[in-house]
Length: 109
Image (cartoon, rainbow, N blue to C red):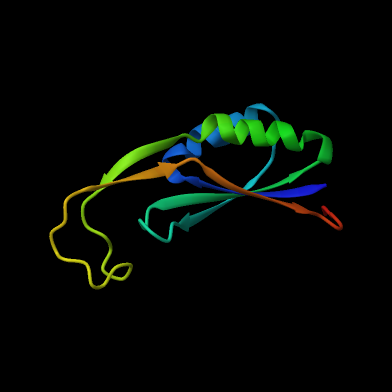
């Protein structure tokens, strides 16, 4: 058994959740915040049987899109010495960051 920890952008959350539910995957959702842009994320925890791991990874990949976004002002606590006015900077957001961990034991009561 594996523990899949997937961090997705909040904007992709409903689409990912619907696709996981449609394929019979159960998950726990935790609200989280990204470190650089301070955008909302969702962290999903999924217990997955080894033989279904590839399937869940494909669902996550197909439903969490990376896209470009323009950011004009960095957060002061991220870049304290940045000038007040800057030209917008293009950054890639979205997609998913996925960790797969081996589970030593699993219990459900």
